[in-house]
Image 1 (cartoon, rainbow, N blue to C red):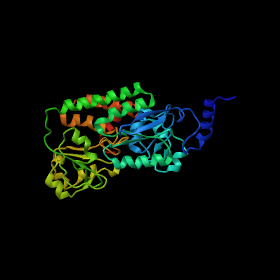
Image 2: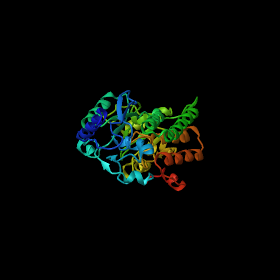
Image 3: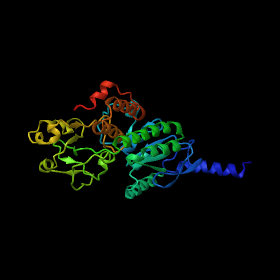
Image 4: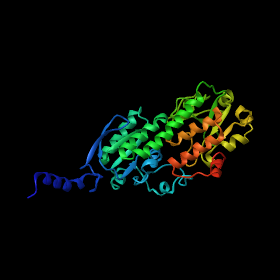
Length: 345
């Protein structure tokens, strides 16, 4: 005759398949543990995590370096369908609409991970509501640029990959230390402007999440304009002429970048940055070095600014960038590919 404990286990196994999004396998909530995520939330998760879904594109990028073999899909994004200089394993992951509850439930994930700006509680509430709808534990990690090392530490504990997480966290901490050392006691002469859209008249004002790389590296931002709902600002050529930036950074892939327009414009040629040849095409492969998405790719912006503004030797910059691509994109970036990153494509 079965013992009382055995009867309880058998009963649980019979009813478990009725839970939405749950399958009968090792790692289910029959064997669970409690953690506190980076939003301060208490979460019950399976003891063994096998199947992970990232909530969105910025989480895709952050999660892949440590959980690529556990990601059962990646969130659909507006990015170019052809990304360069990233692992084929990432490219082969199926894309899913992670806002579609039914589509996610069919994949039976163990957990849903979202990288978020913790201070935005409305976003956290929205993520929680979706996780409850699909009945899958939600784990929130911090997306703040200067806390990415801690995000990997938590993911290492979560996934039982402490050694792998330590390598990633150590690399990030060294980037932070180098940035702090380079900018310590130094002042950047001049001011910068971020040019977006084909005409370059959409920019990133100070205070926007899109401007974090500039703020962390103490780069003066000349744009003083109200933010739109996406954290950008539309400005006029007259305003740019008044601001007269000393550095211009052009963002956007291919034809969407304003780089060619600015370099050929009869109006822009009067701007100091153009006259002194300080107009930069911001690398975009596989993701833009400042933002879009606001994920680990922003670390490359910290590295690059050490070169542009603080006299970091080019060879050191290249070595740091190539190491980043190996660790986070699982891609061996060649010298030729590195040099091509800074040219308008």
